Length: 90
Image 1 (spheres, rainbow, N blue to C red):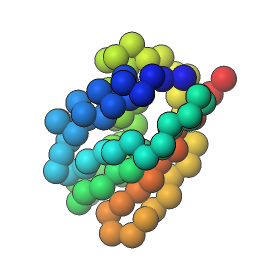
Image 2 (spheres, helix red, strand yellow; image 1 turned 90 degrees about the horizontal axis):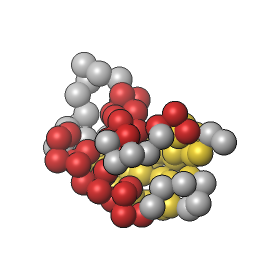
Image 3 (cartoon, helix red, strand yellow; image 1 turned 30 degrees about the vertical axis):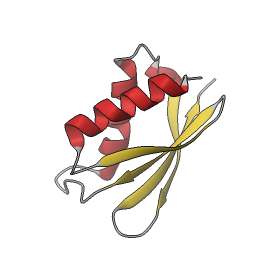
Image 4 (cartoon, rainbow, N blue to C red; image 1 turned 60 degrees about the vertical axis):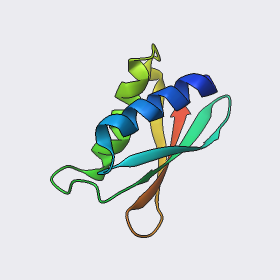
């Protein structure tokens, strides 16, 4: 699916532009999915979902076909923490 290096670079870029409102960290990565933890106060003027979608757009900047990636699961983990699983659509 996505190399670990590209995923880490995209997350670093994501954090550069969105932290401290939202900070992402890779939790797990397999051949067909990856999991990212999002933390922060988030801007309540936007949907939380928008912050998760933004990572897909950062991946596009690294040449990843974002149409092939979907948000498969979102788990709320206490105060301002979400764990999001992204999966290959194919």
